[in-house]
Length: 232
Image (cartoon, rainbow, N blue to C red; front, top):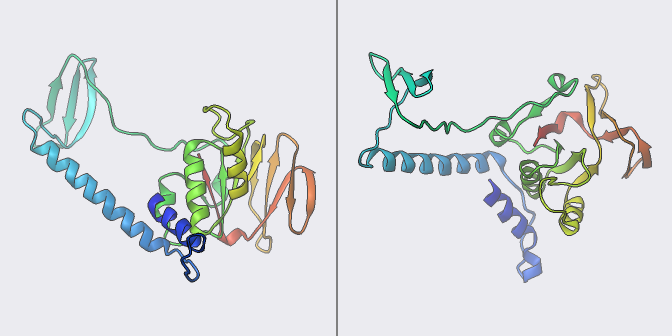
C-alpha cells in the first residue's frame, strides 16, 4: 500500500520532471486487492520454505502451556500433542491496543489492521498519536488524496526518535499536526451536525479557512460522514 501511495505521489510530481499527466485518482479497492495478492504471495512462499526445511515441523493448532517447558497443541489431529523444550519462543505477533478515550466507541474508528481493509478513500483522516505507525499511515493516505490531521500530546512527533526539526516541519506541511494536544473526549455529532469536537487538555492554537486563529479547545470542522480515525 505504501508503494501505491508513492506511485501516486510521483505521478502528481510528473511535471517536475517534464512529464505531463492528467488528474491523479487513487482507487483504494484496487490498492487493497494488490496488497492482498502481495501478502498471499509472501505467505505462501514462506510456508513452502518451512514445510520443505529439514528437521523442521509445521504444526497447526491452538497452543497452551502446561508448565514452563511444555506446550499442549489442540486441533492438530485426533489427539492433543505435548511438546517440550528447554526454550520455547512465542512469536505470535501483536494486535492494536484500543486507547482509553471517552466516546471512542460511539464514533467511526479504525486501527492499523482495519484501515488496510478500506475500499473507499476517506475524505478526512484523523490520526490520534504521532508514533511511527501513525506517521506511516498519515503520509500514505495524504498521498492517496485524503486530508490528514495528526494529534500528538507530546512535544514532538516520533517521540522515541531523536529530535528532527526538518522532519517535523515537513510532516506539518504535509499533514495538519496539533502538538501537545491530548484528546480526552470524543463527542459524536447530532444528525445535522458536521463538527467533530475534541477536548484538549492543553491550550493549542490553530487556523482554519473559515474560523481564523483560535486558542483553547480544538474544534475541527469537516464532514463527519467522510471522516475516520486511526490511532498509532
